Image 1 (cartoon, rainbow, N blue to C red):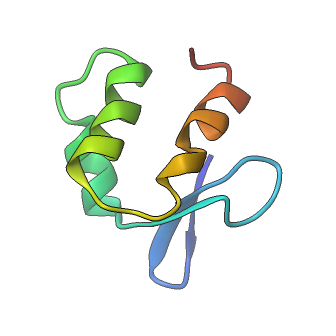
Image 2 (image 1 turned 135 degrees about the horizontal axis):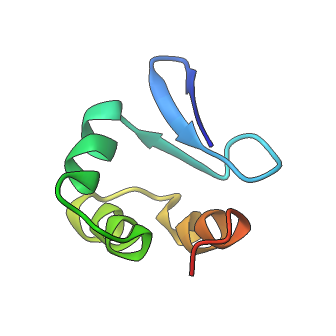
Image 3 (image 1 turned 180 degrees about the vertical axis):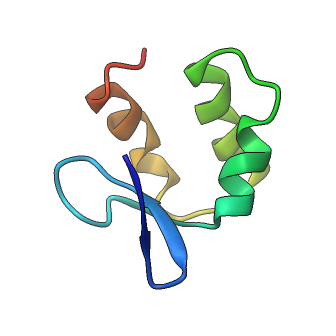
Length: 66
């Protein structure tokens, strides 16, 4: 789930703020031309320094993405 909050877009689980701080541009750039969610997730981890990236696996797993 992605929604707008304080000028940034947050990917969240069932609670607010587990993964945050990525701009919509960063999310789009990481997603560009990707064919799997796993590659998208790894791009977010590899392309950007974000202190909440340690929660990306849990966020993607919550949405059924392996």
